[in-house]
Length: 294
Image (tube, rainbow, N blue to C red; front, side, top):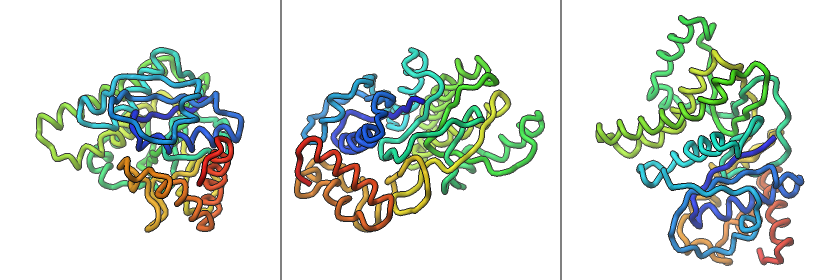
């Protein structure tokens, strides 16, 4: 199993990717992690580069997200590039940078497995007119009912003899085309910036649904919040530990000093939950390996 994550080459992502790499190193799986990095010429000033600077499987690419005014495009752009250039092959799992590996992903019987943990998003379903898509698929015999269709990262793409070659060759290209068209249409319609946050999620959900006739898609709890106590492969700290910690507190370079580091705060909050304790153990492993202060 390979694992794929996309980041932009800016300070905000460095400490996140350092933790992600360290969690893979703790399982001896760092060579299975592929990191796509969108180019950015901004000045870099961060102590958190040790793991990334030594990581074997990094690919650099044009910053399609900034060029098109929608940073989320980088994940789909880099995924399509990695797959078309055979850097990424089945099976693999698509991650976010603000995750920590707790245990390896086990093989699934279905072709695609999506995370089903707290993923209901009525705004996105309305944005893509989900019921209309489902009704069309039901009429064509692809879906048998209007049961909830879940989508969230991580997403596992399993190798299976029933996965059509057409799907393997075209899914990520269609995904990229769909999102690119959404961005172009939003500029033409002068849609407000707030709607652009829907584009990536909407494109994933729409294209997964439309692929359900070509492969088997299932759901499982693959990641949960750092404050929860669920047995999952990945811990996701995207929602933080309110009110004491949030990854967005560390977007500014001035917030990444030794006295005000995300690592220091996460170590301080280790007793909040078993997952917070595990993330703290990953940080301690990192600090010890590179002889750094907390």
